[in-house]
Image (cartoon, rainbow, N blue to C red; front, side):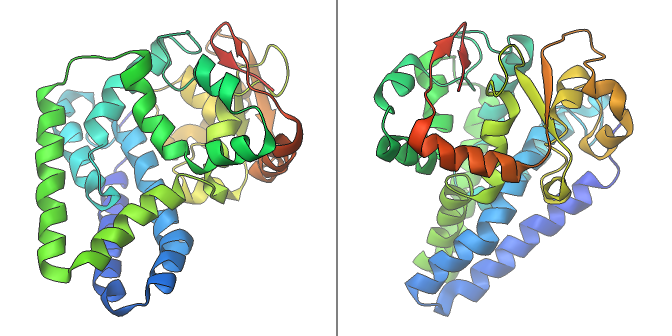
Amino acid sequence: MRPDPHLKWTVLGLVLAQLLACWLVRGLAWRWLLFWAYAFGGCVNHSLTLAIHDISHNTAFGTGRAAHNRWFAVFANLPIGVPYAASFKKYHIDHHRYLGGDGLDVDVPTHFEGWFFCTPARKLLWLVLQPFFYTLRPLWVHPRAVTRMEVFNTLVQLAADATIFALGGLKPVVYLLASSLLGLGLHPISGHFVAEHYMFVKGYETYSYYGPLNWITFNVGYHVEHHDFPSIPSCSLPLVGGHGRQGCGGRGLRGRLRRWGGVGRALGHALASFSFRADRGMAAF
């Protein structure tokens, strides 16, 4: 349970990569801009949201420098295009504290989502619009007062977007926004949204994945381990090993997925057969 000495440099590299991409896409045709937003920018921006997840647990500079972590999360937020980091931290604490709690854990789909998205076409639409539901669901399920940090996050993000627009025009701004919307929607990396807490097996509410996609997602696949030991930085979660897989935090209700490819097949199958339902606040197949 210590800071990750490499996290800030990894985040810096990802942010600079997206700023360079903003410069390069200025002359691209729109179809190619959207292609690279999905194939490259979507991976980078999704990775940055997971870096912000790690930073929200104070793993960049340690718990003794909490303010530094909050400010750095705002910096990591810049390529995402919309203010995200401060609000995520506010609600993510509740996700850990009230995991699966109806009306408290805003990661759980609402009753309306379960009722409305009940056909293959609507379920596909839900997957495409996942960024909107993930962003707007907290405002509906568990609204909370706006904090100063959220105002700061918004002002910094708007200033960054305006600067990018002034220097590069519309296309770089569209590239960043498209990277976030496409990368967090129907995208291979987004398999972790379903893999983490959906009940693939009755009674098991949290699952881990140990495949190679962890290399570009800050080990978010080690999700059982993360919920047992949220203060351990992502780079060290593989060291938890078999202990976390057995729920050594005493919570129980843990499972394991061999690969997100399996989740991909589950998502494909989901379009034909799975059903959401609210079961004590959990979304279930």
